[in-house]
Amino acid sequence: MDAVLRALDVAIASIVLLISAPILAVVALAILLTSGRPILYKGVRIGQAGRFFWMYKVRTLAPDAESRLGPFQEAELSRRTEAEVTRVGRLLRRTHVDEIPQLWNVLRGEMSMVGPRPVRPAFFSQLCEEIPQYWQRLVVRPGVTGFAQTRIIRDESWNNKLAHDMEYIADRSIGLYLHVLGATVVKAVRGDPAPGPGTVD
View 1 (cartoon, rainbow, N blue to C red):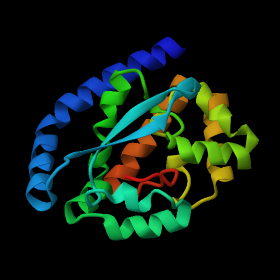
View 2 (tube, rainbow, N blue to C red):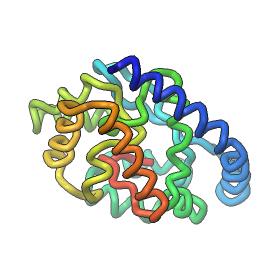
View 3 (cartoon, helix red, strand yellow):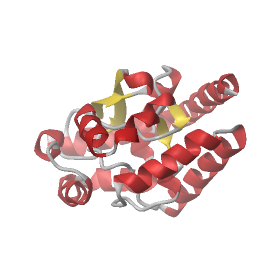
View 4 (cartoon, rainbow, N blue to C red):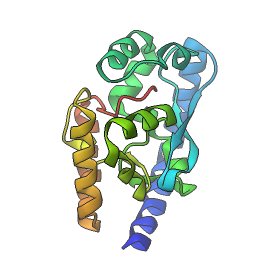
């Protein structure tokens, strides 16, 4: 099954990147004209088996926002992040276009289309102290979207998010993978906010 899911990852990521290339070009120009560089945000995340990798997104926050938001988590992080979102970034978040560069992480094998959302190393260490079983999320590749992201609101507890992640890992199948992707597309079309795990842009 892992080989089939990986083949689906590569096929879907390649097709979406190819189709979205003109959109990304327009987005890059809009960001450059309204808030300058950088166009992309990259941040260190923990991947499968504890390996670190650079996760990419289109920048939606003011430059250097992560240095100001770094110490905060969950509801406080969400509140402070709202003040850092640029005008273009607000649209990108609502349409989830900011997530498209993560498909490059998928092609590189660092992420999957579906899996637990990746967390920053500092958060991960803290969460493992508070929730000893949290490390179990690392048995699969982190995802561009996840089971938790289709079922809960942004500021739900880490324990609840972990429960959904572990349910996906335990029941992982091609059918569930496609179900999560379908639910994510529906949420994106409706313009639902991305719940995320409380990570900065």
